[in-house]
Amino acid sequence: MGATQTETTLKLGKLEMARQRLLQRYEHQPFVSCLAGLYGCQWKRNQLTHAQPGHCCCSKLECGSFALIVLTFCLSLVFLYFWNEAQNDYNDFDWFNFGNLGFWFPWSIVLLILAVFLFTYVAVLLLLAVCLLSEGQRLYLHRCHKIGISVTLILSIVASSVLTDLWSKEWKTVLLSFQVTAPYLHIGGVVLMTLLSWPIAMHVFRINIRVRWMAITVLYITVLVTLFLVPLGMYSPCIKERRSLGSAPALIGHRGAPMLAPENTFMSFEKALVAGADGLETDVTISYDGVPFLMHDKNLRRTTNVKDVFPNWTHTSAAMFTWRELQSLNAGSWFFSQDPFGTASSLSPDEHLQAQNQSVCTLRDFLDLAAQHGKLVIFDLYRPPRGHPYRDAWISRTLDVIKNESSIHSSQVLWLPPELREFVQEIDSELQQTTADLAPVEDLQSRHISRLNIHYSSMSEKEIRKYSAANISTNLYVISEPWLYSLAWCAGADSVATNAVHILKNLQRPLFLMTADEYRLMWTLTDITSLILVVIIFVFHWWRERELALSVNSSSVIENGSYRQFRTDMNDVWPLSNMSADDKQEPSL
Image 1: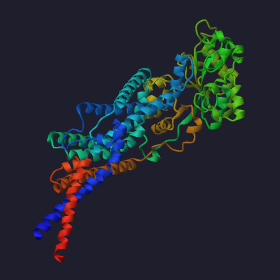
Image 2 (image 1 turned 60 degrees about the vertical axis):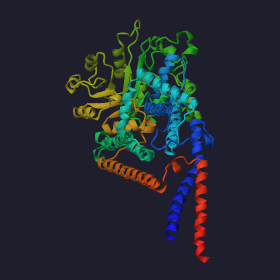
Image 3 (image 1 turned 180 degrees about the vertical axis):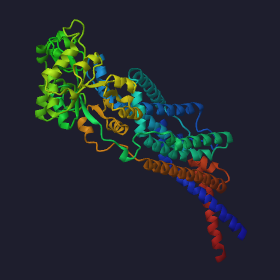
């Protein structure tokens, strides 16, 4: 009688454990139904199907759909990261489209919103799929989602291809971004792999096919170890001792302060100086009657009301207008109708009125303003078109304004035009000769070059320090994002041309700056924490599956725990519970 009672108690304990597991699973069904409904529009409980232990989670078609989701997730992530890091050049992108389409529209922001939406959509589907797999459910992706995934994949590929063809230099920006974001991307990758260890470990210990088990395990461990060791190959100029960090690069207002006032207007340069600019940058064109004035574009269509005043000259070269004609144009009203940086609303009523009435600015007024505040100036000088009276005298006419008509000292001028450099050097040897040519140091010194003016995508700490050792300073253009300015600061750049003087001036130290010891500590703690958690998760799933196999003779009790099976097992449990109660009452009889 004692042996029978002991055997009954053990069986009751095993079935009680099974009952608890079945209850947990049954109570969990609303959550699983919600996942399946969002993923495959299977909202009813009887539509759910569990994957058998050791079998594939879905049909070949659904396996292909899941693989497509993973591929689309990766490509949409790449596109989103690419376009997000290109924010520094959004203004150039929008003006490029304006020149081709003839109307202004913030295409860059629309493209960013689209990239975020598509990535979020795919990421949610991938998360739903992983959750369903973690619950042992078979995957059935709804056809609407299959269409959505296909469209997202096509859009990501087409957008990336078109932008690469038109704007390939932005990939250099992406590579530069890794120099500041790589340590944090590494942490994100390790965290993601740690989270994935839960569903992977659960399936690994349920797989009966040894080859598949080994393949999944080896692949996961390889990726995880690779992530652990990635920092060994990382480089960032912002990982350095703080005492070795140089002074912040000087800020040169690119066309003034174009976020705060219409570009290349007197108001724009005043705004830049108030914001703390160390220098001013502009573009110079010579009018038909020989007056150098400030204008970036070849024509006046974008930044003046030439379409209203001279409707037949909209596409005429700006240099073919006389100064009197140029004075009749408004160079400020476009700033409010197009709002290129989305900042026009930040102007006060008085500033709004002032900006609305801006006119085309002369080179002389620009130079006098810089001289009054003791600031450096740099400018591009455009040669007039054929048939222009100053076609062959544009250099001498500009030098005449600098030396004889303005109050600026020649040493404040960074002379950038490459034409007739030897002639310019003879006429005025105090001009700071500046070039965009990354030539050998000896060559630059022979041409009396004292400063480089290069695009930020060519930024290199090694090259900057090499030229600095030869007393050749470096100016980078155009940098308006704090992370890019931080990178230029860490790399040792002497100055940057920027649209955002008012923003970068407030940066007290480079973003992402850390010492080598701080980075090693962050890297080590991240990897060790991840390794410990992954081991714990794998051990837990191994223990759970082992205990489950021992407690129930057939794993189908758990794996196929549908509502019917649940009721059948409950019928087995309650009679045994009653039997146990009767056995306990027998001695008293």
